Length: 575
Image 1 (cartoon, rainbow, N blue to C red):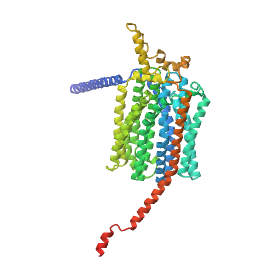
Image 2: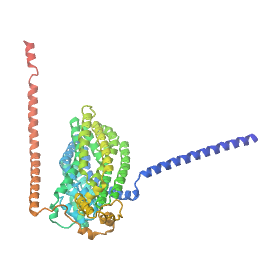
Image 3: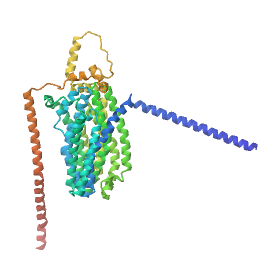
Image 4: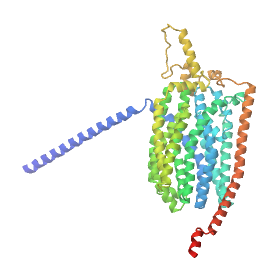
């Protein structure tokens, strides 16, 4: 019995020792985790929780809205893809041509509103928002309507109209393809009907709800003024978007040179990639709106906070999206087609795209911050060098000489977006936020230009030379700015300061005379009409020229096939 008790005591002692060691290791691991969490938390900006709510409130509906807009062409591709491989390839090329020659240009020009309207609305100079919108009628109506609303933080109308447009598109595709048997042409007609319904329904919604009343001051000469300031932002904004967009469309054309399988796989990869990009795009738009509003209100600290939080949120969301794409790579292709060659090729591309998506997310959100700060020229230059001097040349080299096909193309684009991420992050770290705030206040019409302000400050300093009295500054990050502008973000939500906003200017810079306005706008209109005429003429004559060249080529090939290749050798041998 004594031996049994002794063994029991020893076992209990061992158990006690094991429990104490386990408790010690658990406490050590908790301590290490706590240190890691504190270290991670030190990287987070102050007041990030409230900003996450604000960013998510904008980004969530924006993701749905942009997805609904894209789903119109996506649904058309799905319908035509189940008609056959050739139909899928034809629709893919047609969508690429339309995007390159039309949609990308209109979207790029309208993205200038990400700077103008967001900064002006942040300054609470609401009537100038309407003047800027009236002066941008040359861009696509739906793009303009969407930018007009989203840069004021109004997103849900686009979601509602987008859902309605997709319902119209799906019904029209079903009727045209399966009832009327119109084929690809019927799908194109359905797409056009849906696009018109988007613009008309959103316009009617804005008018019905009176969303324009606070910013609409009626038609005036202001709508034809300041085209130079709009163009100075619109052209770089267009290039910033188009240089990136055109790269993927060029990839589709190059894939068509290899085979129908490569073209179909590239089309599917492009469609899936565009859907995945809707998530970082929502945060990019939210970042552009928040940064623009903050700079327009003279609060550069808020602009910095919005930039950091939007980037962190987008990276987290895109990480999960990349994981989902990687896990679903085997079945994604079946959404579009039953062709096993295309499905297998899509599977291989999705492996590369999963890593591409993470870097593309960072580049997209930082690009949105750049637009909100009004630095589109730098962004356009970065996209030009990244895509056309690095990404596309490397991708084409891997695509054809290395015989990797579209996988080589996407590999080159991975390197491109990685370099873009590094460049944009360095740009935002080194950005002079104080100067960017001054420029935003000038665009909003609530403060003179930075150069004029510096001259005035120098003159004021000379007049006050010898005085040691300094004015107190209450708002952090608002030095050298009008005190009323520094609190506009809070005042917008409370509705205060509307009377002062009415006193702000709706015209910035030197006002042109009536004769100068008429002369310049007539010349601009003539140039646009001439460009339109050239485009229409080219679209009419180009198919005929291509058919003539194709006929001549077939005649030459036929005559060459009937002629002996080495007649001299044959004659010598017979003799």
